[in-house]
Image (tube, rainbow, N blue to C red; front, side):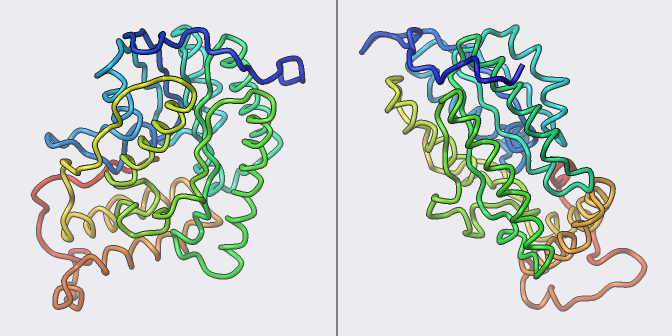
Length: 300
């Protein structure tokens, strides 16, 4: 199913005529970045970049949106558990952003990942969907991974990007180059775990896809960049990192887990006020007290 039989699509016959309200079917496949972790709305529910984008499109067009992304998903999970339902939706737009979970697992297998990702891209594109993808940034830099561990993660992300390069060469679509975004390595772009975008990061990604969709001919008002979500304070952040984030990472990975866990612990410490960062407790974890609201969920 991943041969060279399908050239990149150029026609976008579904686009509404200029100045007219249209009907857009949008399906989102992927992991927790597309599910929305890191961006909680005022009520505390996760939303994310895809929902921001859909809300903006929906101001000017009728939208049918299906978010199939599941936290913790790998590329193989997307092919097995999300692709069929995505095809049933017969989307005009299909976001296919997944793979970082694969890069931090000891089960890393680029040959199998390539087959699965190309299969997803082929099936969606053959049905007429315009693919929305990314080219990943240096996430080892976000994690502050040292030495050999950083080089290992960079090598895996480079291999993943090569697969996405092949997807774009075969099937076209719209792709955001995250490494070229000027704020991608800013602390404010990322949530406490440094794995998921913050509300700002999600909104910025929605804006990047808005620009590409405008160039493709789909006109709508961009989503706002003003932040209105529910943030997490220093206590909640540190409690989540210690009680949930690090144990989750231990379950999910082996080879990169210890170093990433250390960056999470440091991130929590950095978010505490100076006099609290020096506080030590015994028997009850790194910080005392109970947070006012739960921290983020624990899988990507």
